[in-house]
Length: 115
Image 1 (cartoon, rainbow, N blue to C red):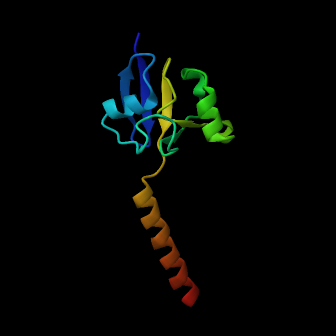
Image 2 (image 1 turned 180 degrees about the vertical axis):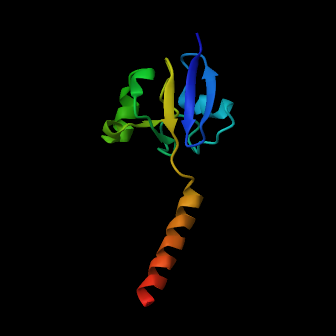
């Protein structure tokens, strides 16, 4: 039986077979999750947030070591998180867009402080 994977904030969902990684599900859904290591838990770039990890297979030691406690906040590595049943994945903001938003906010704060 296929499992539903929902990607927020895009509200895009896809059905995948159990055993599929979140990274593979994202790619199948046409969603880009940045990674440099090819899905080997080496680059730490594919972090996603998952509020309820009960739809995922238990975390393996290599992912737990890489996350170093972040797993307690629902952070998982998309390349290592294996879908078993339905799960909702919260994607982080695009790094470029987040950097631009920070820059705009800083400029607005500087302008406000002048008045």
